[in-house]
Image (cartoon, rainbow, N blue to C red; front, side, top):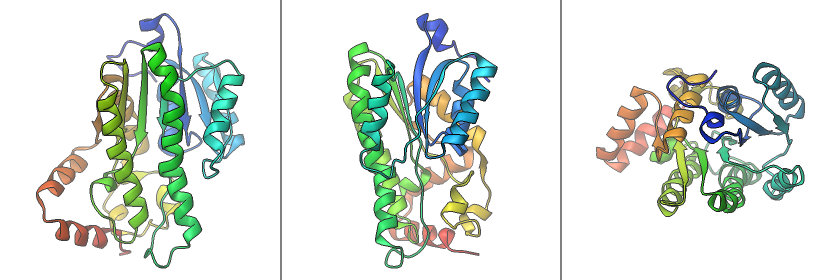
Length: 271
């Protein structure tokens, strides 16, 4: 559903712009597709083609927009170039890039298979960076564009038992803030969405369903997606949904780093 208080992109520009959403088959990416569909044509990508096609059929039937399906596995180094190659082949361009795809793994760094950690870096960091690099030239040329990178509150502190995941999200936050500053005056903005624990498939995939962090409570994925969309439309650089998450992130700034790391380890441990 369209967000109250916002003028649709179509009305504002007399045309419907196009948003590319990664990880659109489930979770926050799926909900962002639902929220953005009234105002945007969409390009949805993820590994699960069947789910993407079901989503496209549902949204086109409800909103009358165009939803283009481009299945891809961002763990493959060539996937971002393949996606944009298909975008150009279809005569499309990307006005908004939603870098949502990502995953985590749980356990001590020394015990997690190297391949799992490298795949995580490829999806969470390398593919996100590659897609932004491919999207930006066209946005700058058109003097308009939005990028929403999905990070996490995890990116504000070290994360024992999820060391690489926390580090990837720290990269996304730093990268997003830096390039948003660089793009000032171009008509292009970069926003970074930093949710806390959220009710998606993430916890199950990361084997974290019994961790103290997720047992303390989770935000609804729809609420996180709505906050991210509002923040992106406003050109807000950093979006932290939920009062509890905002308070925790502010407290991290004034807490000794060693204590922050100890608390983070405790929360990531199984109860």
